[in-house]
Image 1 (cartoon, rainbow, N blue to C red):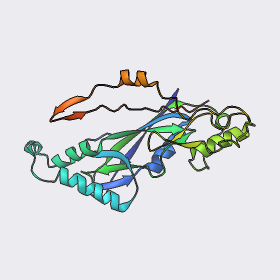
Image 2: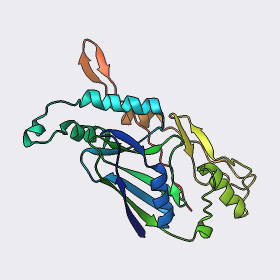
Image 3: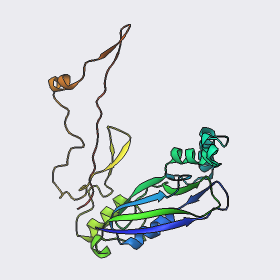
Length: 242
């Protein structure tokens, strides 16, 4: 287990401003030597925020307007202490002061539109953001890390299997639509099955009817003939790694 800590000093030109931190965080992650782990990005001030969202000007304007409507600038009890930034404290609560992001194969493992933002609500003075990376480190060559590749996990898994001499023709992409929900589920090990081997079932067989009847909660009566039936929830756990 290794760790690395760095501090980003923020000096915004305006009192309220959003700053994209994604590439700065990525630089810290790559310099840490962590191949598999987590990175914490946290504002060390209670009048600013750190959040993840799309880097689209209209959306950022909407987020700023949404926060302003819920915590408008004005008179607050906090101002009786001599402060004037009560709304900035509340905006911090709305957007959150920190995020924890996955590190996979030595790089940030973000979704296609995910970006890391610093939200300043009482700026024009130095503030700090802590970036702390923790996880396992090993040789980049052993892990097959190629930081110049696009962050496409199915493609990277297929590349690794090809380098190791495995047959990547069956299910080379490794991405399958789970019929139980709107999720693209990558099942580890797909693409490693020898030719002619039986295909793993997409999902477990349903329970026998009598078992399902015993597990199903009885409807709750709401009056006037209406009832509320509890629907079972299915959780899918996907594991990656060797």
